[in-house]
Length: 93
Image (cartoon, rainbow, N blue to C red; front, side, top):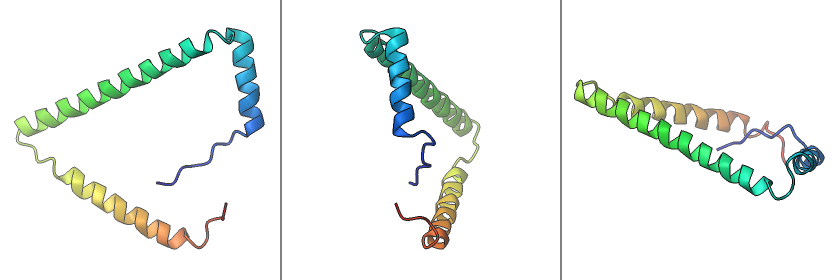
């Protein structure tokens, strides 16, 4: 999967880290990161729960959910076609 480059340079990341240490202190940074990680995990779990509930409800109502696999397959084909076309145009890093 192709990742878009971050538009933040190393110096800018270092500056942001410096500001974080100045504002929160070095002893608080791990606690903040741990809290952010737990929050992201909770959001991911909640979204997975919602997806599974929607899937169960659709199956219970007799709605065919196999079309999502077909759509995903078509998306993958389009991505491959785009990669094939832009492969020679893309900048080398």
